[in-house]
Length: 184
Image (cartoon, rainbow, N blue to C red; front, side, top):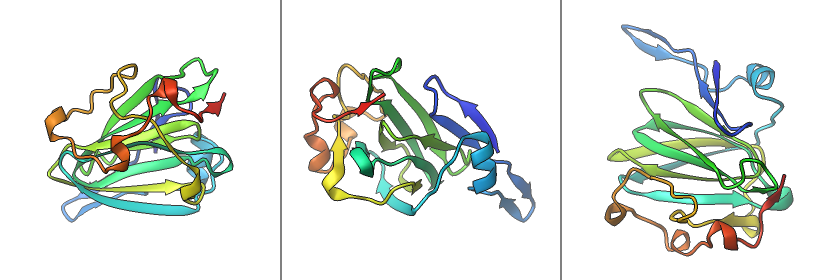
């Protein structure tokens, strides 16, 4: 696997080695030993999958305190714009974000460490999105910031009138008003 650094240290894009021939392709989507050598120690405990249609925007989510999660995310069908926002108070990159288009064709993955809010928008007709987490889901520790925070100014690459949100994702605070963030 090839590790591509982003403008925010710790958030990395993983490019797997693809072995393709007339029959199709093969790649390792995760290798514990290689990941730890190239990115750092991790122990994933939960895998999740979602299916969404064009225009769905999920985020910007995180889990607080002892329930914080690192995530390794990828798309197995379709295309999404995946976004990680640094919400670690005191970080030199606080409030900055990284985005990458993840598709079934490019097989890219993004690793998002603890201390980041995460979200994605679906750019294709349908997308199947998978992610590994290093901590179990804890509903009592959910946190989020507004997907349309003007200080973040994220271009989700979907016309605003086509964005589909859950009722919960329609009412998150702006980053500057969020009651719980991480310490750097």
